[in-house]
Image: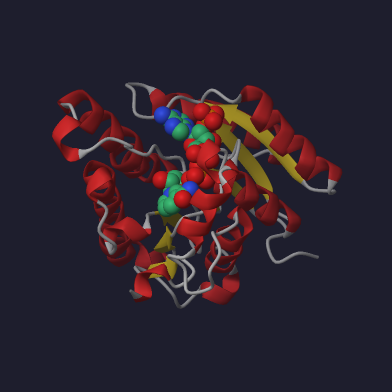
Length: 253
Ligand code: NDP
């Protein structure tokens, strides 16, 4: 029996990257996982397939976040999928992972780009938590994915880093609110972690990025997924409101 047998989990942005690795890891521990995606229907279906092949249970849920009605759409699909498989809409674990990078210098950032980054990275997680609290029972777990950029300067990503700074506030303040229900909430801050960005196909770029970590390599999605798996397990029952550095030592300076 896995550590999460009998639990249900929602991982946003689980069609690829760290979200996919997290969905796979939680399913391996026995959780039934809702694999959320926005546009990557095939990729989300592949995540579900990989989980099922491995003997786990999962289903895909589509919703565009950062737009009006997005959170409502997410919970329609989530509750339908949970009810079908468990007979209830109880959700034990929420991982707010979906996010968008800025990739634009401060002087070129438009108000529309800024609003979109905040809508997806900061506003959506707040309202997902607000809505999920009707489904999460006592003892539930929430993890929000931040970024090492809240502690490591990068002038090309100021708006993005600001949005992640906002996300970190969720753990601090919700932890106080949810403590009496034994619900924990924590932030995980990855460093540079391999995803489908073409930059990871350029060996010189990977070498340069690797040099930022004290371990001299870029992070793999599983490096972060394993940290999340700990935080959502019973082993992490005494950890809440915390900032967990999962940057491979990048923040050591
Ligand atoms: P990817 O870029 O590989 O994947 C992003 C995921 O988020 C996809 O599943 C995508 O869905 C989903 N998503 C993006 N925008 C939206 C939206 N508007 N509505 C709903 N879903 C959306 O992610 P990473 O693994 O690189 O990053 C995961 C998290 O970690 C993010 O929050 C990111 O900011 C953070 N992070 C990443 C770092 C890195 O180096 N990779 C470093 C530090 C933090 P779909 O494909 O279906 O559109």
